[in-house]
Image 1 (cartoon, rainbow, N blue to C red):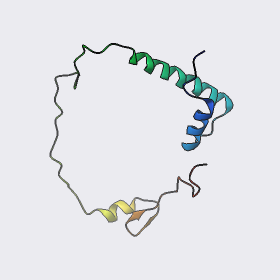
Image 2 (cartoon, helix red, strand yellow):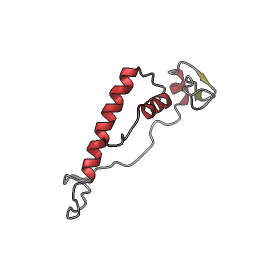
Image 3 (cartoon, rainbow, N blue to C red):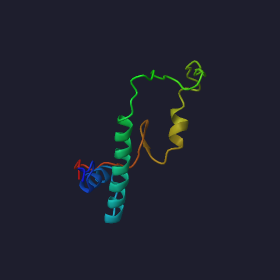
Image 4 (cartoon, rainbow, N blue to C red):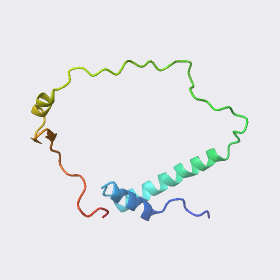
Length: 103
């Protein structure tokens, strides 16, 4: 049997970093799904692309850009009036990271 490309422990570690709580069934399912994704990516690496010219765009369309012009500036007071909480000119939001870093 081939060496696994991702372990359940790695899935749980990444889930912890993302602040996701996974059940044992979830961890097993995601480990299996990610393993299959990695297998597909490895299959793509086996395709001979030596005679394929790089493609920069698949269509003939150009991206149309407009000039970047600021309008209706200096609306801090109006913007802050819509925020549930603010201090000075800053919008207060709940913390999403704890003080301990990884955990």
